Every structure is written in C-alpha cells, then in structure tokens.
Length: 210
Image 1: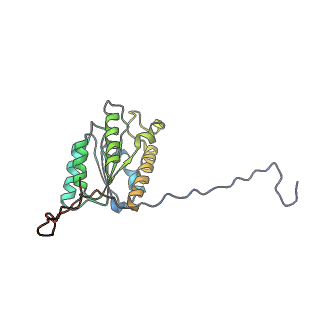
Image 2: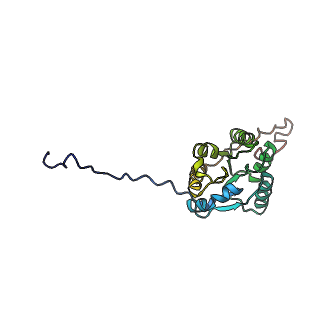
Image 3: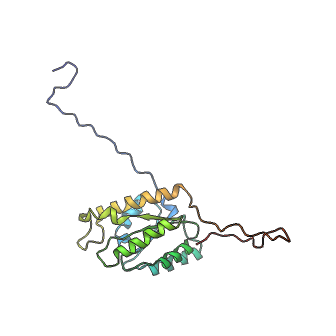
C-alpha cells in the first residue's frame, strides 16, 4: 500500500455529469400530427415548454394541410412548423407543395414514419426528397431512430411507449434546435428584365418560389 493512496482492492466510482440538452423554446414551435405524435405529446410538451400540439388519431396528410392553411390564414403559424403525418396513408409530392405554400417562409420540419404498412417506404422517400429539394424543409428520421429499438413501442409496433416518446422527442428536438438557430434560405426568382426604352423593370413584384 502506497501512503496517501487507497488500497488496491477499493474501487472509487466517479459520476460523470452529462451535459443537459440545449433548451428549446416551444413558444416558437408548433406540431401537427397523428396518433404517433399524440402518444409522445406529454414528452414533447415537457421538452419544449409552450409548444402548440395538435395531434389526432387516424389523421392523414390532407387533413394536416387544411389545419396548417387555416392557421396561416389567421396569422397563427409559428417560426417552426412540425408535421408528422404518414402513419395513415400515402403522402404525395403535391401535398407537400401545398404544405409549403401554407407555411411560407417558415421552417417546415417533416417527421418520417415507422409503420408496418405498404406505404411506409413510399412516404419516407417522398419526405426525404422534399427535404433535399426545398431549402426551408428539414427531415426528422424517426424511422432510423426507432427501427432498432422496437421494444420501446407498444405491441402494435407503431406507437411509442412513454420511454419511446423520449426517443421521439430527442430526434425531433435536435432538428428543431437547428432550425431555431438559423433562418431558411429561400430561392428567389431572377432579376426582372429591364426595358431598353424606359430604363426601369417591367415587373417589380418579387416573392419566394414555392
């Protein structure tokens, strides 16, 4: 035994404090979803205080577009709009275009799906393509997060248990935090042509391309 040191047979366990995840202000975030989001709603509300959640069983994308459009018309959309609608049926590129028109110059965060149905891969491919194409669309890869942790789901293999809800929130919050740090860069139309005779633009109205 070396003086000043503990005997070799004693083990000291040191607790390493893990850094807490960055706080995400939910007051700038809103979420529209189906029963998967509904199952994770308590965890979402706890992780992002003040978040607006509108989730319902059996909701499809077409219903979500209507909700987002209505919120936009009444000036109630927030800076980040989360949409998680793919559990109950296919999603088309045209539906996502309509969704972007309603969202405008805000961030649109799409959550892909994990569901044992024929449309799962089609939905996820369509959402991924939208995230690659549009500068104000971000993707939450819920499928990749849960596919190797299906023990966190209920027996239906779709809806997260409370501990699965924490995983759901973890992947969603990471993307939302990224969105809140920056503003989306939208594509703008090219400069309008200039009239040779009068010397001023033929058209002066500009707006983002959707």
